[in-house]
Length: 467
Image (cartoon, rainbow, N blue to C red):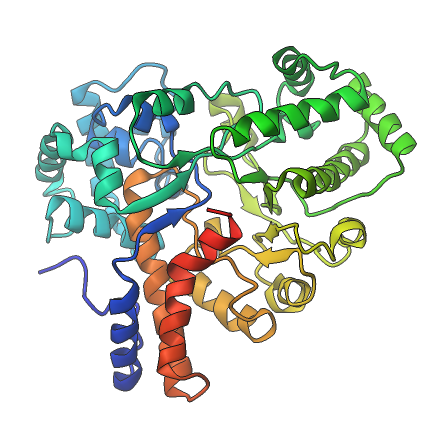
């Protein structure tokens, strides 16, 4: 028995499957470029062993614990929200609970990613279950205790060429400084995520603005000083390899207010007496301000809109942010982006990468926009749609209008370190399957498909993110 079939995700039709195999052979061993993600830079800085299987696989992965929570398993029972590390007995208990519910992941991309890790890294060939949970735990724990399973060794094993972490402007980037000081040659860069000082609804926003001023030496109580603080931190992030900014706004709304009105809006936000409309307008104005800064400093601007974050109020109160309770919402790109595009849409030197959690916008809005404006590129299927079906829907709906070259390849956008090669493998297989069907239906030639497959797996991400 094996967990991974060699033809997984390839077409069922024989001729297309043979083409997909040949295309995949050209891309499967290409280096991984991970230009946007959320792995912890301390892993690479400290290079310490991962503590135990539960802490590695279950505790940090919202794909896993949101599914378990949906079936009535309390997050406390999964070791989440603790200030102290799990003891060995506690970690084993969490693992057994996860293993006994592994069937819940049937049909999900999470199972594909986990099975990939279990087989390729640890040699398992039997599905995880309650009966073999302890065996799994023991084998994984034994491996984690060896030098080959420390973060830097895995970085080399995964063939990662470059990986970007994502930090707040308030982060001192101490881990990135430690990586540089260590002399290690793994390329780990940062990305500028200004949400804590851009979103008036962000927890502790006013205190964050004050800290922002203290950190930069700018008077962030004024509009000019506030913008100058962003410029200073962006420049600082660039010294640690940043090539992009990232913005997780509730919507894709942008605004381009006259300077006097923008200054007045900022003053209203700073007063603390503002409406939800004021907050949304401010976020929209800041996307346009960030685009202006990107035109000056060359950072690629990523927009990740359309998530109703922390939807479960009780969970948010108990555990805080990012507990698997974020839900996709409809997003209007055509009208929302118009103010920004009126100002910057024709700038060839600016790159804005659009992501979506609203699949209905692919062919109606996103592909036509990216297929016209020089500054726009389409990010890959993200979060809920980082799946074989989601990737295939994206290709089918976006390619005919935007083509391949107005897309940016794949990025894994994950906190789950061991899933990175699995996610890239899934993307490469799905793209090869899509291209194989194009070849066998005589829409492109196989030599063209081979070139496109390499670009989707590797080249486009490097180019789009200036890596």
